[in-house]
Image 1 (cartoon, rainbow, N blue to C red):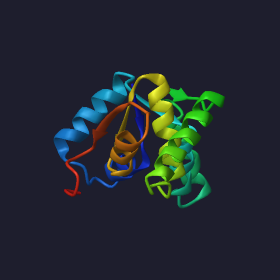
Image 2 (image 1 turned 135 degrees about the vertical axis):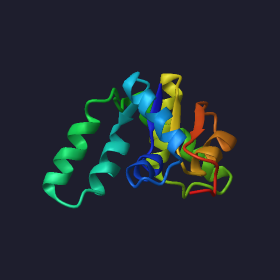
Image 3 (image 1 turned 60 degrees about the vertical axis):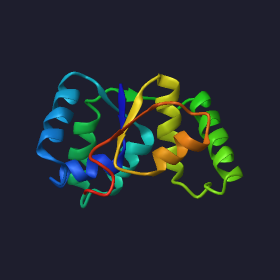
Length: 139
């Protein structure tokens, strides 16, 4: 299972992802391999232009599997942020820490276009599959 990150989702919606990658992501969606969690849904809703747009975006995304944020996810995200702070990287997106913690505890990965996930893997005990939407720096 892969959790969606807004960095990948926004590029997919804007048509900025490579066409072959778009096809793979569609297969993942149809196969039930992509999931959401609250931080992603909030970021997706934040980018809506109108209330109707928000309703449509969230309505579509709520059809995907969803990982709940529980106390274990909260603790893992806080621990990861502390580990990052020890190395001077605590200013990473708090949402990315929560998404990474969800992926870690689910034994899955994150579909993204964001170097934060590489830093989280490098400097914390969180372990998850880091799947770039496209090669870094190409979009």
